[in-house]
Length: 567
Image (cartoon, rainbow, N blue to C red; front, top):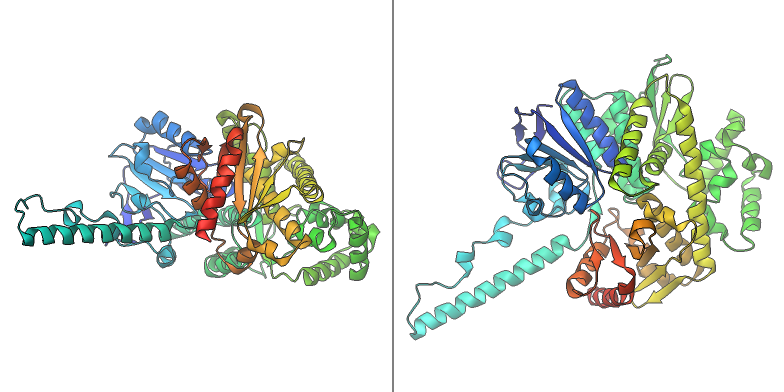
């Protein structure tokens, strides 16, 4: 890899940086699917140039700090994928001569990283720069001497007193303006262009893009959609603006390529139903929020309502209970069109076909990788081991000699987990666990057999968004005007702690294309005010924190005060 693009806020904005001394790279990746896919693309680029590297997987700021401290002396270049962008990296004490490159989809960037010296580089697209609304450097880091009092002023005459008073007033105004700018800049967080797509575009610039790398990028991209981190509108726009050249090149509609080892990627209309091509249609529908909320499937009459809906759609119960792929091809097309019209979705996605058998949608592939990455023990060795297994799975998917058994086993494991998460949604609604707490709704999930699954970010976000939609379906319209805060009890080494996250009000989710959230900023304000409350803000996503069990009441009282002030 010979060059990358510097998107720092300076006169040389967007200039190519030539990096010749890549003796050994320290590659640090977050354990999410987008980062996994981006890592696979980056490793492909390194291998093509015979560049040695070390790979470390991190789960949060503490593990990132340890990784840097343990390995920093052995490398002169460090690349961070989906980590390190939204908090000052200088606090982690990287060596001054080390080149650091950050590829992170989480916004906004920490301004200390944006305005850091040349050795720290943020990789973003030129097209996104104006959307970031990065303030002027002088408004944030104005010279202290310019706003401080003149030390040479020793006379107490009227003129000098007035001059000092004016300078004090100007200094106060500067600090007030600075605070307002910082509040507006950091007020909300959101997810932008996936890192996997950024690296796909970089590979294309280097003349090294291929169908395999495109597949990695679209799987990482679809993982953001499956985790409800981006809206369908934003997803569609990126497909049009950023992926169109790759679709034309690697997904031609009239391709005549054939062979056991040929990767073909199609881009076409798709149903948002989870795993439906590997499941029965009925099972997929009763684990999808659209059909569950429409029929209120959690109620006693829910199954009857679902059967009535199927009859209305002209679908028989017998064909819905069989494996979807067991239907005839003509019937599958009919059912597909019926459900697409019912859902009223313009969703389109990518499907990969290897040879004549291996066929899977990018959404389902992303789900399987989430299961492989996130379900299991949380210690660093286990996390890294799962990451390497998932990385190997992604690499071997393109091989005609792929052993499908582990992959199919993970599909079955994912379906079991999804059903368990859906059952938690039903319990939360039926037992009225969601309580109004001033400006937000609060759901403290009781300990149960399946709660451990919510330690996974993927299943936690599915659960939180699912339960909010179901809750709003049940009640008055004003339920869609308040955010939902969810607290999950942890087990094992984290017993005695709660994992807490928040979901923006449903009306803003529908209105905001970028899914911008003030939850993380609100959590930060509470942590600043409640110094005696033990809160661990270790996750890269600030809207997810760990809270000590005995501090729950104080934290939620503080959050109520903060959200009331914001609203």
